[in-house]
Length: 438
Image (cartoon, rainbow, N blue to C red; front, side):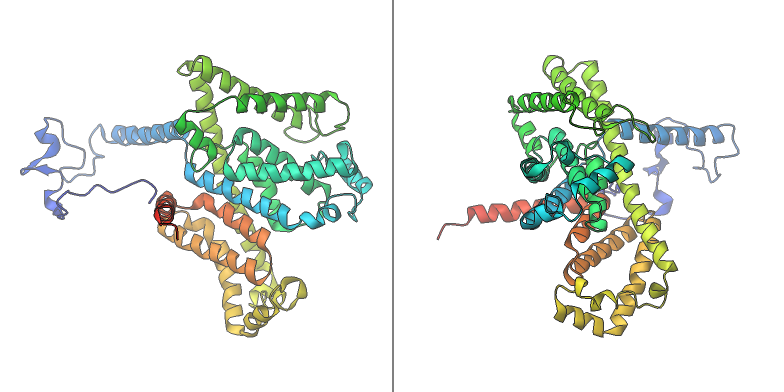
């Protein structure tokens, strides 16, 4: 499923145990004129002088292959693409849904006034660009830039720039009023940071399509220059306050300026080396570093998802409502969590399903970190959790939270399933295109 297949005889016949490793009755290695493998004579291979050395060489070889794969191969390309598409879609849908209420949520009509927001920002040092100018025009510009950035991330257009703009707009709006939203906003907040460091547009994106056609053009250069000029104005204009600083008050004691300028400089060096020396060593070094950063970011995303489920599950274990199996009963009878009163009443009236779902939720969340040791069990449990989040979105009316968690869960999806879904999509699209017009 993940690209690792078992080698079987071409004829499909099962090789008897006594014939394994033999060629015409002769052991394969002996037939090749090589010494037999330790253990081929029935011993465990540890009695000879080369036993520990062989085991040590095997461990060293496996470690070397793992390091080579981690530093030289982009891991989880399809999973990264699904995570990018998922969070771009979640944030875009949220912004469009709340477009009529945007001024009340984050703008000049918000109950959490700009003065209160600036006082809180002065205490925690969170990043946002909304206080730089204030007023409705600047807010409208930032909000609609957030819509465009989410759309660009969803489509995978110039992702090196669009993911950074996605990060800036997500932090700017969410830090304007930290009392809005639910757990889904926190997940979007975190993933917006991680996506910047991933190579999430190598498949299923406009960037990948442009790379296949070989038509790069000068759009990227123009965008790079515009963003560099905008960053220079923001850095030297004196209106960014404490947002764009070179040092921070907490670990790792770095501000946002080193991050933005570093990303901008690396993008420029990447383009220059790709034009002047595409096969040179400096470009190869940059590519290897980008691969390692991507793999580390994907690992962090996976660990983040595991921590979310583990902490949520163990906190539920300590709750009395989860212990007696009635935790789901109460939100089903609250107006805030009943977008479909009839459906909520139907589910809430069935006590046995409510009991089983409450206990099942705790068991699934606590067990998920341990299921990563077995691929098949992990896939089954992952499907159960995704279905559970879909049910939460419909029954409890928490679409942002549910879709954000489904998008985060996608980091564990098997590559084979994603490729199969892509083939099905291409088949259906081809049939639709070939269908004659009425």
